[in-house]
Length: 246
Image (cartoon, rainbow, N blue to C red; front, side, top):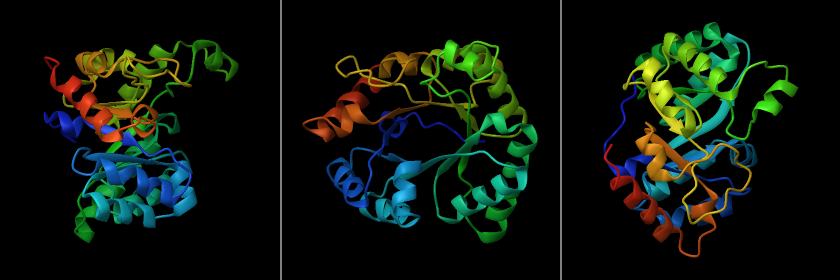
């Protein structure tokens, strides 16, 4: 089971939501030494391929959260998870909507692969409901439930399936902890400092509020990457995390 660190700097993940290798490395450069985690999503990974993982690690020494949200038949997701572990990522995710069999199969096979290959087992988490989703959008997709109810249902399935945690809105973090326990990680996007714009996130919260609600890691992108001084913005958020009582 993945464990959260109490180091405030370790609890901030910077989302490298950029289009090219050059943009990614330019974003990483000023954050070296301040940021301990970078999130690589589908846009950047599709544009650059596996090379981007190695290059970010070599340039910064930071950890990588590979945010590709695997969602397929159990065998395919397990193979994808093993490939991610083989790249040396420190965390990756899949869609909890893929079901318990998909999730549990991936956990078992990735764990066995890492043991046999001498690889460090990544933290494995599941996406619940995207933070951009609202109740009307869920209903339009055929889901007759509120975002919060679906998040709790999917988090429970992820826990039972042996995953280390989930990705969820900070608004659901406390409820997730209540049904899964403190050792089950909650990674929260939809975090915006009070001094930043909400952009396209619907269910958002400030960094300190997210931590106080139970978030173990917070993911922040544009408020840092688009700041006049990205390192200063990152340190400002880390200071806000350290000021909480959790």
